[in-house]
Amino acid sequence: MGVLLLIGTRKGLFLIRGDDERRSFEVEGPLLPGWSINHAVLDPRDGAIYACANSWVYGGTVQRSGDLGKTWDRSEGLGLPEESELKLASTWHLEPGHASEPGTLWLGGEPGVLFRSDDSGASWQANEGVLEHATRDKWNPGAGGLITHSIALDADDPKRLWIGISAAGVFRTEDAGASWEPANQGTEACFFPENRYPEVGQCVHKLLAHPGRPGRLWQQNHCGVYRSDDSGASWERLDGNGLPSAFGFALALDPSDPDRAFVIPEESPENRVTCDGRIGIYGTSDAGAGWQLIVAEEPAWAAVLREGMSFDDEAVYAGTQSGHVYALRHDEVVEAARHLPPILSVEAAALQ
Amino acid sequence: MAIVLLPGLLATEAGGQKRLELDAATLGEVLRALPVADLVLDERGEVRSLVRIYLDGERARDLTAPVGEKSRIRIVAAIAGGAL
Image 1 (cartoon, helix red, strand yellow):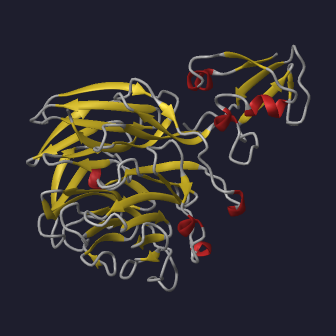
Image 2 (cartoon, rainbow over the protein chains, first blue to last red; image 1 turned 90 degrees about the vertical axis):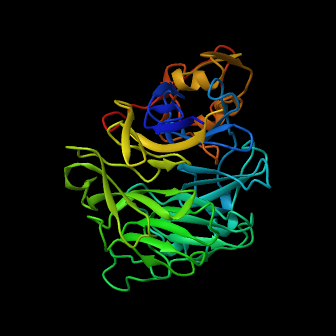
Image 3 (cartoon, rainbow over the protein chains, first blue to last red; image 1 turned 60 degrees about the horizontal axis):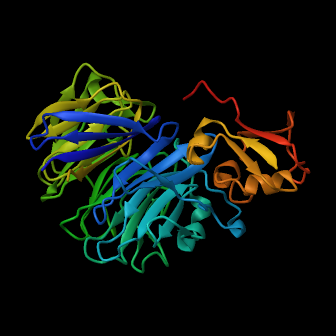
């Protein structure tokens, strides 16, 4: 089966269709010209595409297409309640809900907010548990703002999910969002002068839950790569053996093997380019005990953002801020596209 | 009927309409009646900070300003280039 890559860029959305072997790719786009697409995803339940579309003039919204990008409908009325004294600044990540809840969507945005829709994005409700969280006054914005950028669903239980907020950390709900508990034990906030293991305030860069092993989470953090095997109750640091840097944003998993994961480290928080003058995708096959380098391209000084890597059953895909898209399959890298606008997100879906 | 002129992206979001005619008494009523009202106004009903409204050629900030039968309202995206 081929792959459909949804490439969110600073200047529109691109669709890339790849063949069964992930060797030949065709680029379509830009769709939604004029919009900056922080994230776009295909809902496997009904085939709709959702895009977190943002304009520096007209604000943040969600665009939905039921015909693979030919026509679009914008979510109107997306905003925060007046009593919150907050305004929605931008939309960052859309996660289709559990398979048992058709029409349910989760949406993360700035400033550190979460929305739920139960009508495929026609209307949205701000999650009060996140909006009014008791620790909110300890959250601080990162370079991208105070953003809810990761929404991870439990494979079995639709009432359990995790969110990642920069820089507030990971939060878990067991009651479909009514209440949220911090889940940061063991993750470092290395930028704090004291108390580097607080309850909240960690700068999670990307959080993923393995779709085949309930309770196994991975995160690329500002301060390391971590894995949890107890639903986020505790975290083990993994970047001591084979990674050139603890810093990075992108993260991908292997749906068929919960011990495999991929990251793209960057030099440092002050120098955000890929390490050692090349685009290096580092993979582990032993749950993070060791990491091996796969070179996508060199020389290169690129960067892959937090939504810039995705995966399916066949391959891992990465898109750079310099507009290149790579597919990694069986340790072989193929260039899928070049000279796109700066890439903000990559998602892979089955090509029907 | 007041005439509203939309810039490119707003016109696209309004189904390709660059020019609209709306029957309203105030500037705020005109903006709230637009098919792209959520893009011009934020969730408090305030004009977004980088949107500029011109009423009959003059910069308009007061949404209670009256509009006449022949008023011409132009919506402009502020100059904000360089970093994008």
